[in-house]
Amino acid sequence: MSVRRLAEDQFQPAAFAFNDENAAWADKTIQKYPAGRQQSAVIPLLMRAQEQDGWVTRAAIEKVADMLDMAYIRVLEVATFYTQFQLNPVGTRAHIQVCGTTPCMLRGSESLMAVCKSKIHHHPFERNADGTLSWEEVECLGACVNAPMVMIGKDTYEDLTPARLEEIIDTFEAGNGASIKVGPQIDRHFSSPEGGPTSLLAEEPKTKKVSAKKAVEEAVTATVDAAPVPPSEAARAKSTDAETNAALKTPVTAPKAAAKNAKAAEEQPAPATAAQVAAPAKPSLTDKNRPAGIEKPETSDDLKMISGVGPKIEATLHEIGIFTFAQVAGWKKAEREWVDGYLNFKGRIERDDWIKQAKALAKGGEAEYIKVFGKKPR
Image 1: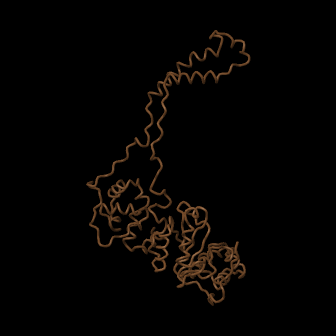
Image 2 (image 1 turned 120 degrees about the horizontal axis):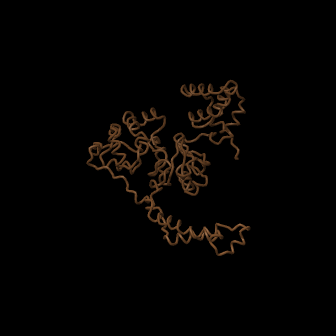
C-alpha cells in the first residue's frame, strides 16, 4: 500500500467547522453509539467533512478528534489508512474515480483513463488548470456486470464508452453535473441483460419419441441385467423350465408391462415448448382504456427520469402521445393496465410506482423527487 500523507501546509486551511446542517447531523450520529463507544463515529464524521469541503484537511481531522475525545494521531491513522478519504484538494466540480479492477479493465477502463488524462491531467490526483476537475484509478466499485464504470461523488456512471465519458466530464466542468442520468448509460434497466430479457425465449428441445417395440427391448434387457441370480439358485438357473428358473420367468411378464407403458407414453402429448405458448395479445390502440395522448409540445419532459423508463420506452410513450410527467401522474388503474400490457411490462409500472414518481417530478422536478424518495431520479 502506498504511503498517504496530508497535503502540504500551503493547501491547508486555518480552521474547520461543520455547517449548521452537518453539525446537527454529526451530533445525532454520535448519539447512535453507546456511552464510551462514541469514537466509533470517526469514519462517518470524516466522510461528512469530506463531503462538505471536498477533501479531508488537517483542521477537519483535529475537529473530529476534539468532538470524539480522541488523540489527533488516532484520527490521522484512520484518514490515512482508508483510500476513500482524499487527503489533497480535488476538483471542485468533480473528482472522477475510474474503476480499474479486472472486469472493468477487460471492458475498456484503460480507454476511460486515457480520456481523463487528456481532458483533466496526465497524472491522477492532479487538478486541471481551473481546479474544477481531478481523477484517480480505484479498486472495484461494485457494478461489474455494467463495466466499465466511474464514480463521481456518491453516484456511479456505468456502461461507459470513451465518448460518453467525455460528454459527462464536459457537463460537470460546465457545472451541470446534476442533469446527467446516473447508472447505466445505455438502454439497460439497472443490471438487467443488454437488449432485454433472454431467458425462456428459445425453443425448448423436442421430446424424443421411442417406439413401443424399442421400449420393450430396452425394458427386457434392463430387467434381465438388473436381476442377479443368487448363488444358492445357481443349479436351478441351468434349468430351462420357467417354473423353476426365475431368470426365465421374469422376461415372460416384463414385455407385456413394458409394451403397455410405452404405448401410454406415445399417446401422452408432448409438453408445449416456450415458442408454442401464445404470447398475450397487445391491447388495441383504439381500446377505450388507452390514455389520452397529446400533440408533441415544444418542450417535452424527460420521461427517462422515471425509474424504469429508458430511451426505447420513452420513444414508445411518445408514439402514443405521452410527453409529460403530468400525463403519467394522471393515469387511472385501467389506463395503467393498458400501458403495462402495451409495453409488455407484466406489472412493472406498479412495481416501480411510476405514478408516484411522475407526481413528484410534475410537482417540483428533481428537487421534489429527492424530497419524496431521498435520492436523485435515475
